[in-house]
Length: 155
Image (cartoon, rainbow, N blue to C red; front, side, top):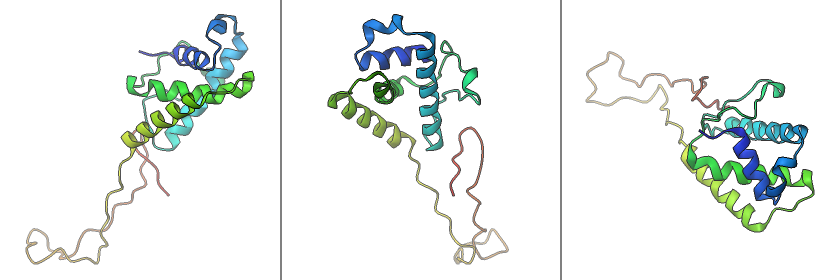
């Protein structure tokens, strides 16, 4: 399992602070974990659910906790976190890192994209072959507003 510390260390390495990782203060590590948590919460809100444990309070975040994200998301998380951390340390992210981050994020988007199910109006006839129901029309549309760990709320 990948921990939050591993994501943070890899992101610092991506912006060129690899040799200084052990010189970072606890406040800097806490700030990096907070940015990681907020980035993952944003992705979760966009419907990209990776199993990352979201915290309700930034003070409750533990840098040593497991993240439960698949290995396929590692590059997207580290490079996008590096892009978010770089300005705080006066660093400029290379064009290669930006391109990798964009490509990895688009890969996550393509894996998370699920087209919405087509809802037929309840005035649509089922057809002449329908003999299972007394009602000759389609059932009313299902309300797409659901909530749960794997549900997407659409407005």
